[in-house]
Length: 253
Image 1 (tube, rainbow, N blue to C red):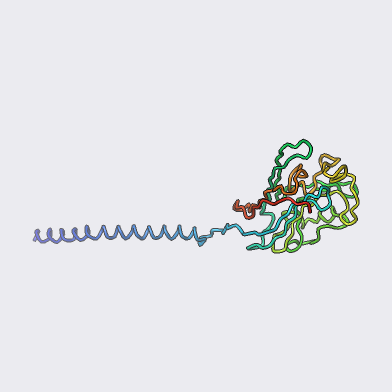
Image 2 (cartoon, rainbow, N blue to C red):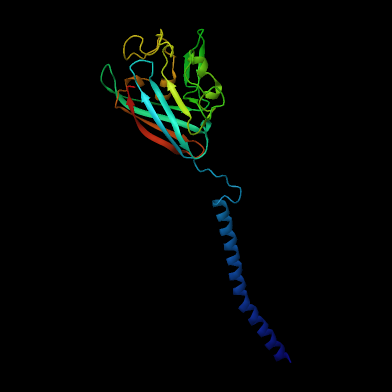
């Protein structure tokens, strides 16, 4: 009787030992599957992950140095975007090298345009200082005046919706950072600014004066000649991705 009990007890114990490894392996598989599902959920954006993929941007840009303020500056037109891009999420970085027109040494230049960071300091009418953010926007994506250039360009540029950071890039949106120096419509010569003293005199009478072209391209950009190249980068700040980069050849018109 005791032997039978012992024999029966032995057989139950043998079954338990046989089942335990199988259960353990199954539990490990279940845990592995759960972990894999969680990882896949995060990577696929299924568990509250925000899609930070950078948008695409295609645009034509040009940099013009006419030798005087009229017509000179930085200009661009957006060809296409994957989605409308708020300029408050963008940073424009320019860099270049040129030969100084007076002492013929190589100089380096460039600047960074950032939403909310005033980069233009111009004189209005009457003699009041106007602080703005260039490049200015026009056309689709601008929730205000869509025209760049009027009898009083300072008043037009001061439209807050046109300032960089307040408009969005869409197909057809224009960006402009013109040189200032007079009346665009009449061609009236200014007392300070571009082309006042001689063909390539860009130094203003007031040292603190910064026009849109200088704001985007940097100080001493007037030394750029036709054929010189300016590297222009547009950076999507939420991801740090460069969504546009090109070496733009300077032209004279």
